[in-house]
Amino acid sequence: MSAIEKVLIARDKDRPKITDYVDNLFTDFFEQKGDFLGKEDGSIYGGIALFHGRPVTVLGHRKGRTVEENMACNFGMPGPEGYRKALRLMKQAEKFSRPIITFVDTPGAYPGLEAEMYGQAQAIAANLAEMSALKVPVISIVTGEGSSGGALGIAVANKVYMLENAIYSVLSPEGFASILWHDSARRDEAAEVMKLTAKDLYEFGVIDGIIKEADVFKAIDKQISSALKELDKLSADELKVDRYEKFRYFDEARVNASSVEEMEVV
Picture 1 (spheres, rainbow, N blue to C red):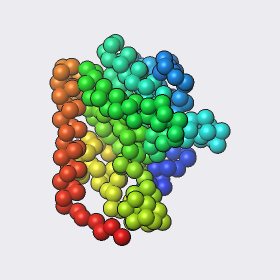
Picture 2 (tube, helix red, strand yellow):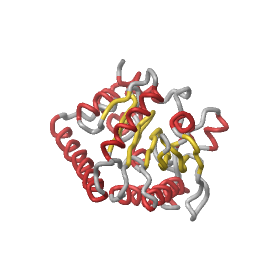
Picture 3 (spheres, one colour):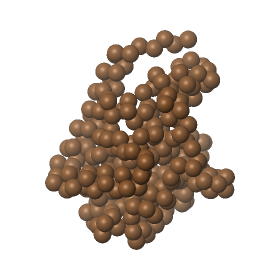
C-alpha cells in the first residue's frame, strides 16, 4: 500500500480504540479522572489495571466512534488538562512501581485558543521532561495516528511499537503540504516524503518493532509481555538512561535525514 493509503487506514473510525485495548488486554481496570487542577479531559483515558495479574498503569488517547463520542472526546485531541491528567497517572505509577503502558492515537494536541491560554505547550513540555526521568518501565504503542507533540506527550517510552497500519509523524500530510507547498491537496505526495509508516520508522530505528494486525490483541499482548520481561532486568537508573539515549538517537537521526534528502519548496 502507498503511504496515503496507510494514513487513511490509520484514521478509519472502525479501528480498535483505547477502550477496546483496555477491555481485551487488561483486567480489573479502574478509570481515574481529572488533573486536580482544571476540568476533566475525555480525550485522555487511563487508570490502573492488571496485566496477567501484574498491576500496571494504562492510558491513551480516546477518539470515540459516534459523532457524540467524537465531540465529547474532542476527536482525540487533548487539551492541557488531558496531559496533566496523564502525567498525574504516570507519577502515581512511579510512586507505586507500576509499569506504564500507553496507546497513541491522535491527530495532535488541541490547537485552540483556550488550550493555549491554559498552558498547552507547557503541559506537553512538562510531560516530555517528566517522562524522560520516570523510574519505571514505559511502553508505548502507536495504534492509529501519532501526530506531533500531541502524540509524544504520552510516548516518551523505553519501548515504542507501531501497528503495521499506523502512522507516526511531526504533523499530518495535509499540514505538511500546506506548509511546504501551500497546497493541502498534495497530501499524497507529502505522505510519501514524510516517511511516516511503520516500515519507514522501523528502518530508521525510531521504533522498536512493528505489530501485525491479523490478531491484534494477541499480538500486542505478546509484545508487551516480551518488553516487560526485558525491561524488568534494568534498574531505575538504567531505565532512565535507556530512555534518554533512545530519544537522543531520534534527534541525531532527524539531523542526518534532513541532510540526506533535500526537498524543493514551490
